Image (cartoon, rainbow, N blue to C red; front, side, top):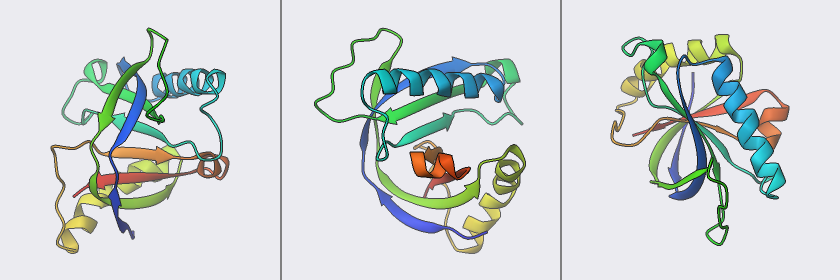
Length: 150
C-alpha cells in the first residue's frame, strides 16, 4: 500500500453529523449533504467532500459512533440552514492513501495504514482527524482518499 505526503491547507467546512453505527446511516447523511450542496450551488467538479469518523468501532459501541459529512465552502458563503453546522478544519501534513471506495477495500486499507506509516517512520497525529476525501471525479470512479494526519 503506497501513500503520498501532502501539506493540506486549513478549510472552512459545512457539515452534518450523526451518531450511530457506521454504514448505511453515513451514506444517507452523505446524500443529504450532497442535496443541500446542490441546492446551494456548491456541488460541482471542484467540490471537496470529507467524511470524518470520530470513533474507532473496535473500541466504541456502534450506537455511540460519531460521523460527520463535510463540504469545503468558500469564505464568502453564508450558511442559512439550521441543519448545517460550520467549523474550520485545521491543515497540516497528511499521508494520503488512494483506495477503491468499497467496504472491503476500506477495511483492508485500515488494517494496513498503521504498519505502512510506521515502516516509513511516520506516526499519526491524534489531535487532528483522519479524513475520507472525495471529489466528483473520484466518486464517479469509485475511489476515495484516506488522509491520515502525521
